[in-house]
Image (tube, rainbow, N blue to C red):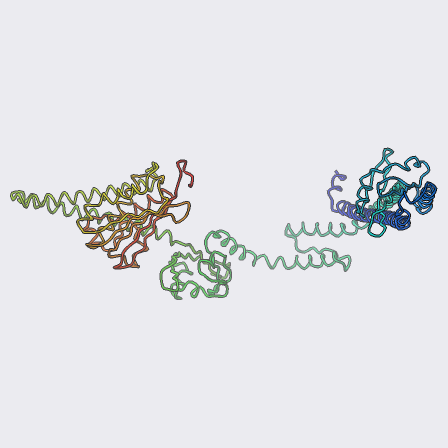
Length: 611
């Protein structure tokens, strides 16, 4: 058990760290040193060969420049003997072969007696061929059949600017690599000795470090159990001695910090519990001391610390005092844009922080953004009110005329028929309203699936204009259909898009004065979509109403729209249908100049992919 504990101790870890550091350091130094030395030896060896080759090429240049036909047999023999003497006597590297070749690659002389049979033969090696082509840098290392590494260098011999031959050098590198191996063995022996010494020194050094740490560990365990009266002995002025002094000082201060820590713990717990919302912590004087990022975003402040809560929340002292003392639970504050329009609505909940024996020592304020929630609630209230109003008006009318008929109006045939006609119209109006509400409900709940089919755009727009030809003639309105070249078919739900177009054209006719114009157009704003627009020269829409024109039951002129038979749901239904097709609808209008409604739909192929 003690052995297992030792292997887990910091003493063992320190020894391992020292050994590993020395091992890694020696390895890195060795790799770098041996690699550098090997590179240096190889470079020196290669440079020596290059110098010998360059010297030999300069000496043999004039001899090789003489044409064989100008020399007799005796002259040619003297030339070969001269070149052989140069090859044997000039080169100083052991186990090296030197060949002198003419411009055709034929061996004229060699430095080795055993290779004299190669004189007169052509050297077909790649290095020689490159040298005879004028390439000076021809070096390569090869391993022969006896597993000996050799260095090959071939240099062209120039006489003037003409290549008159080449020199070919082959030298063994065995001695160089043997030297490198000897150095490797010496380095490994030194590294093993260094590792042994490092292990011994590591044991001694770790012992001087771990003994004081063990004393600190025992004292820390005593402090954890609540014993603050013991002191750690200070054995020196080094880092461990300084640590012992600091530990003793910390032990004395820890007792005093416990009460303050309880207060801070309560504050931090409250903040952490509400991090999803904005959190602001203030002291007993109402000065902000801690805020989170969300609170600064909601309050639009770069730094809230140092501000008073009354300034931060735009409250008076009385309201803030009531909230801080718990007499009020929640307050609602508004933040507005520079132009004065309401932008955000926030709910503020203040919780006092109680400190033992000191009463309230601070406040935690939790901010919740309820803007969207309030908007939804307001929309629901308006929707219920609008539906109630829209249903109550025709029901009241029906009840009034039915009572009139019951009171004797049926006796007069003409008056009775007129009353019945009013009841019928109001009933049809209620039916339209309920139908539109059911349609909107199906669209909202995704219960109205699309049945796409290929439709011819020009024909579809012409049919829309034909359906309203009677109303157009009645008001002397001129309607035109314009389709951009290249637009033929589009995949869509014909019934639902017809409902959208009928609604847009119907609105254009309603709000265009006699003698006006309506244009139904189709164009391609880009390659992936088709835009269908309905433009009229009607009375237009005020700018203040444009942002709400697609809201349900919203009417610019409520009395006039109701008299014209509208339910206030047409544009809402059109928007939902267009959204279901993956498109968008936009309205642009100028008061007393006209309105343009543009429906942009994706141009799809039969498979539902963009065309």
